[in-house]
Length: 292
Length: 292
Figure 1 (cartoon, helix red, strand yellow):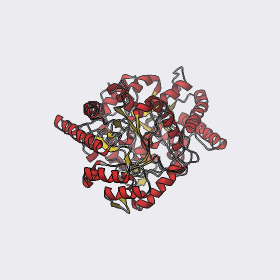
Figure 2 (cartoon, chains in turn purple, yellow; figure 1 turned 90 degrees about the horizontal axis):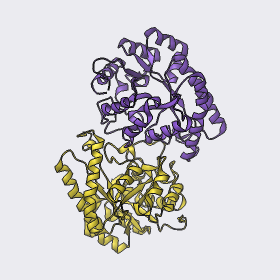
Figure 3 (cartoon, chains in turn yellow, blue; figure 1 turned 90 degrees about the vertical axis):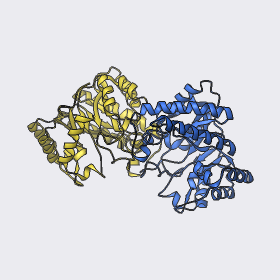
Figure 4 (tube, helix red, strand yellow; figure 1 turned 45 degrees about the vertical axis):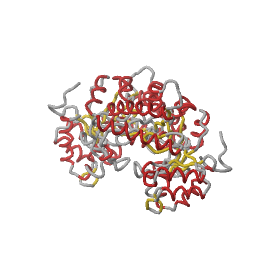
């Protein structure tokens, strides 16, 4: 298992972690400058931030700083109540794949979608089995295009508490079943983004990480699970402040062959998004060395 | 599949559903009278309410009304940072088993416990594997006593969002693995309480319900999953107001041989606990007939 204590060579910052600073949205260009100032070698930016900053300008800025990507957030949301909605989702995923390619991302992270409309509180249907079929078909279609341009797709299983509105793939086992169905040859074109926030509770986690192996483990995200958790989306904890056994899980992931970045992704409306970006990054670096 | 549309002969009310009315705690004796007034044939009371009302007085009142039990809530919380804490938990579970027997409950529902102290925001250890071992050992010890007095134990898998603080058994598959380990002969002494709120999202739900079978399905709880869900504990929805496919899941449960009560258990600080008990019960009856 790699020793992270001496430096932060394997730290990546998901830009959502400092997308709000002192309660206000911060543009991506500033976030990248802040990461560069603290010697952070990689980030994972979000599409909406990249669109606002400009795709080419972002690519140039990253290159100028020598900052790489650990992933690109995010494609997915494949489900739809009708064929037109599902077709629009496929078009959008093609654009996301192209953007990931322009930015030099190692993978496009997929939040696959769930019951259409549920995120707005008006589910258009309740059949989660149907949603799962639409997700499988959507990934299959994206995969064809992604392979043609050489952009791996990483299915991110989300916590079951987000099964209705964000992603109906909620366990690593389910994500790997999809990988096996759609990429039986383990080509490297399809795998998973493993975020400990979503999967830490799973009694089959160690077994399924071993099953995933190097070819399927495309990204590794960390934060922590707080007790109490006050919000289903935006109350994630800083590594070390919650109950997740971070080092044990990284041990499993590395034993399976993963040797990439440890990406910090913290949504925290009540705490970290109220602080300065510099302060949050400094704590991320410290915790990366001490507890991740 | 049984037809519920003509009456509410198979409706049970978990007393938590109306433990608060118009925002205030209501004593169990009044809750029982309210259920009797609307012809509800069964309830599942909570221990703290029974202790406050008196065990024998509650047993007499239920008998006078001809109201049965669909379960008794609840035993469990087996984990502890030291042997003294775990031993105290076993003592308490013996008392819960005796109370369930006095009340004529068909099973004692087990919320098994998780990281000790996490419910108070101060987890005494983080090793969820250790917690799971302590739970297995605790259930094994309780089972011996429960068998001797003839009280079935029903493990309730809780939603993964409650894995840290309330129960580290979070899937039906895990609960059934425990049943197979501790009661290989499917004697009926150990099974599960299946609450759709906790398990509706599980891609293996249908498969595992079939695996459970009649001997393991000791209780069936219903409510609904709201979008958005505003609180991790107390924002459950009334049946029909959320996204769960209630009738489909009941079909699976009945196909596996379950023929007992459909028990309504709604924690709802923001909505139903603000209404009158009579109004809430009337809606429970209506939804039981229309959508459960």
